Length: 260
Image 1 (cartoon, rainbow, N blue to C red):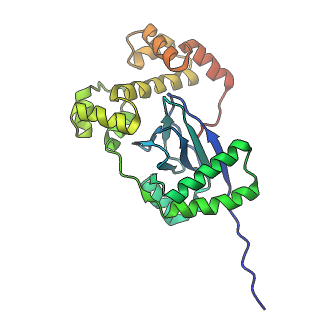
Image 2 (image 1 turned 60 degrees about the vertical axis):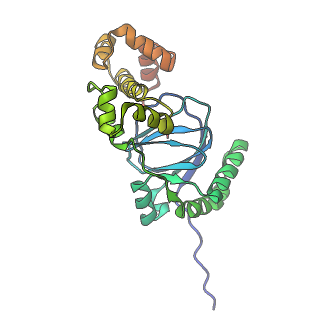
Image 3 (image 1 turned 45 degrees about the vertical axis):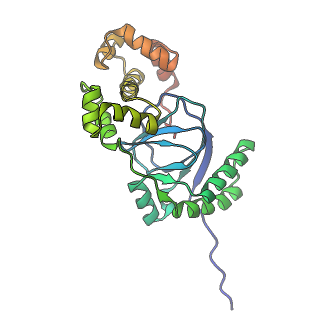
């Protein structure tokens, strides 16, 4: 008597189409995630490692890994939230160690198709059950992207953003000349060392504003700004809001899940 094969069961997964702005706050979540650009580029920092994602390079964010993402230009990204176990232990560990993925042509074609389908409406469970095995199979044979030359510096900036960093000290930390550091930042993060550091510091100030009630002048000083007016100018440029308005909006909205 023939034995039937067990039915295919897929661990929970969800797919989303998202776009990102020029500012981001580092965060983490309790599920794994694939970040698959469809249009434009996206600067990401994953566990202290930075890189520029585009249609040829995707990223894996392991559960509990601190990360953020930003882009000053129009972009569209396919996000896959999934249970780490759906990858298998070997693949999950490999991606966690080298989270940047050079997408092979078949993976890019599948990602494009998924993006077009999602633009017409949410994915049904049946459609996901077809997509996910194909996507994971395509990514399983993908080569890891080259390691970022900025990984050590990004980790140091993330750990100590309020140290008195200069162009020279950042270049020394990265093992590059100041001019070469600037060029690598442009190539990998579409930014500059000073702009990246300023955004990192402002992200801390935004969190302080959202989570506490300390005077804004005090937060400006802690954040390295000359005075409250300097912080206000930076906040208006980044968010369109004053520090007080940002605090009110953040605290009125209450806690929310960070995405991705």
